[in-house]
Image 1 (cartoon, rainbow over the protein chains, first blue to last red):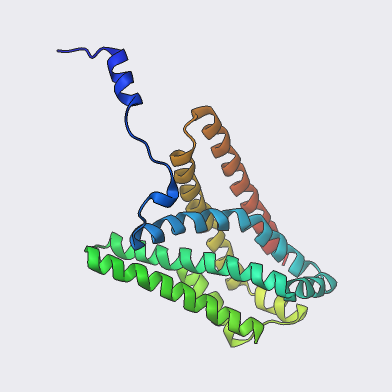
Image 2 (image 1 turned 135 degrees about the horizontal axis):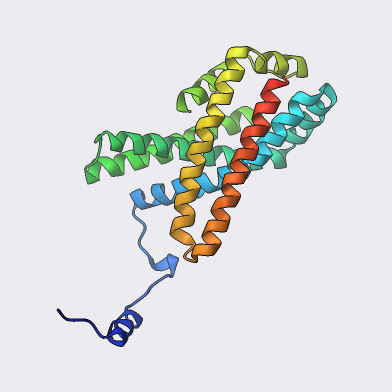
Length: 136
Length: 90
C-alpha cells in the first residue's frame, strides 16, 4: 500500500482554490432561507436574557410595568422589536418548512423553491401586520 | 413550541393585557404557567442544538469551542432556573 508523502499532500492542500468573498457566492433562494434560519436563531438566542429581564420587570410591580410600557412604546423600541419579531417569524416559518421536508413533503427543487418563497412572504406579512397594529 | 406560540398569539389577540393587573391575570393561571415552563424546557434543548451546530461549524479551534459550548450550557441552565423562579413566584 502506498503511504503518501506528507509534504506532497500538504502542498496539494495549499494550492486548493479558496473563495470566501461572500458577495461573489451565488445565493439561491433556498440557501438564503437556510442561512437566515441560522442567523435568526443566533439573534434570538442572544435576545433570550433580554426577554427574561423584560418578563421579570413586567411582573415585578405596577410601576415597573408602566415604565416598561413607556419604554416599549417609543418608536425606536418598536422598530427594534419589529426586527426581533421578523427574526422570530422567519425562524418559525423556516422551521416549519424544515419539519415539512423532514416528512418528505415538498422536497423537489421546484416545490422547495416555492416553500422558500412562502417563508419570506409569510414572515413579511406577519411582520407587516405587527407593524400596522403598532404604528397605526 | 409552535403550538404554544399560536396559543399565545390567540390569547393576546382575544384580549390584549394593557394594564399591570390584566397582565398578571393573563400570566398567572396554572395551566398557562406550566405551558410556559414546558415551552422554555423545549426552547433550551432547541437552542442548545442550534448553537452547538453553529459553534461546530465556525469554531475550528477545539479548546475555544469547548469553552464556548460550556458557556452556552451554563447560560441555558441559568435561564431555566430564572424562568422557573419567575413562574413559581407569579
